[in-house]
Length: 71
Image 1 (cartoon, rainbow, N blue to C red):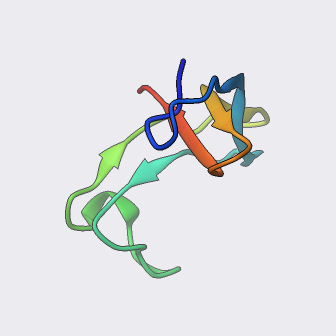
Image 2 (tube, rainbow, N blue to C red):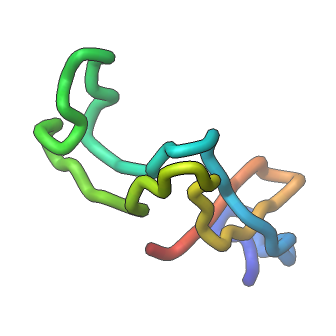
């Protein structure tokens, strides 16, 4: 995959979270005591995995510091 910023080749790897974590996307970061699923624009990227690291295949551009992934 090529970087969308500079066009250079990107390194394939894995974007991962701490144990039992899940990735999500929203218009803003929800507070600690908020249910993240109720945040405006929430999109669930991965399910929580009890006792495992959540991960998604990703590509990294060392020059631009861009990380790209599909969900």
